[in-house]
Image (tube, rainbow, N blue to C red; front, side, top):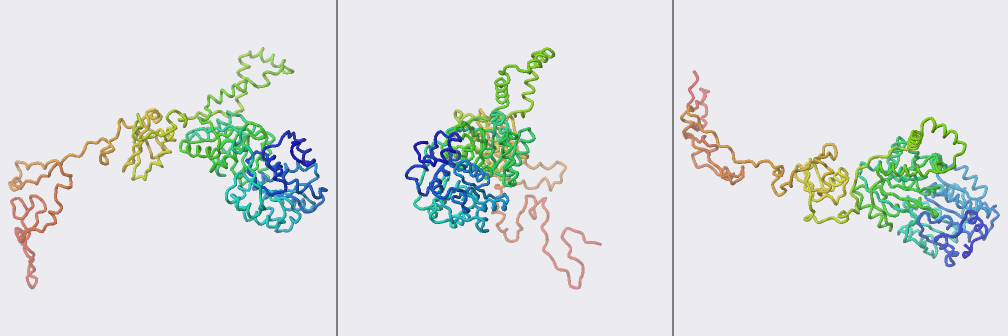
Length: 634
């Protein structure tokens, strides 16, 4: 640190914290070309940027009155969340302690009157969230007239959370000659526009080593079936046995669901979400810091600013929405030279998305399956054998140990020790095997025409059930624990669907499986006849010609036996095409009735006699006209 011009009070504070060297972002803000200028800094989570902007703003605020008696603050730091603001306040507190500076916080969820009294007593540095800072400005309890430096920490996150209007209000209320330092993991167009509006000739600083994101973090992409998602999380926690772990979910509902599941299984777990009060959040974080809790389940926003000691494991229960969020989540671990693990839970339908996220974050992940129950038990046994108590010299416990051996014997005592070791730990879960994406032949999809050996399955839904390939694909992958590369053709017919599964993965489905209630999948003995009309693929015999009408019996009337024979149809024609519809529409010859059916033509033997034309009644209401062939009533 001797190569940089650091104020004596700050240098003493860094030495007291054990700083032997500065990180790349800390060196960049102290470079000669950055002195006195506005800065737009790209720095990833965990790179030491809080100390970096603390050092950067020292040039302007330490040159003034350092007696600690100024009523108006000299520096202002704005953070997107309460946790991050409180963390920044703690870091700046010890950094400026020897300079005699007071640090006040203004964050949502805290007592407004307490914050106002702290501002009235005099604070040289104020740290807060955008909404609460604006409240203090509008009520007159915060005076920015003496402000010399303003820091925007996690500026991209503040814009994502909708704080742009509040930020513009705060920056407009500050003096125009202040220094504005913006720290952001990424610099999207919105951040660039904000910097152009409120900064003067800002120096763009990219922290060194940004191309190599989080070198102390080992990324694991674990391919699991959808039904094993939660069980895989349990096994990962048991496998690594991290001092502190954090599990990220997308929504508060997912956080609450996983909290209940893990609590029932015996994990020491707390949750962080937006619905908790500040007191509840503080108690949860304190439980993690003092060891009463081991696992924290949180949403992305709630986890901003979390700095937990010994955080060795990050689990992405739900994949993040973009690569920047992946880096923010993973940056909770692997800090200050410590090692950490970032594990992504990837279902077969999410493999491509996970690959895009990792590629966008420019990190390499090791693909594989989640730890199995046997692997968890083996790791437990290894920890048991390496326990320091087994290698320590016998002390006062030697006499009690000797009595145990004399009474129960070595085998019984050792077995009891193993049972006690395993008793307080949640039992591991049995997981279904999945196909690894990097397995031979799984990396690239083979052409459909050359899919190779495969088996065919029939699904009990088709066009009538609004079936689509994109809807069926994840369900099939989940049921068999396979990737989409193991699926060949998908042919949706009117009432059922045919799916081609590679021969190596077909045994996973057996003779059939139920994908969900009302949707079953059964294996076919061979390849279906997809080029046949609907209904032919079920291998039913085709419908033949109509059976001929039975001949009249010998005892039938002569008129019936002499009926003209029914016209025959051409067997090669369709069933409904042998009778020409156009012939029915042709008018009958004059004086004759059209022939409707065989044997019923007027005037033919065996047929019904033709109806006589209608005759009106005689005048005066004499009797009804008598039909031919019908005797009159008497």
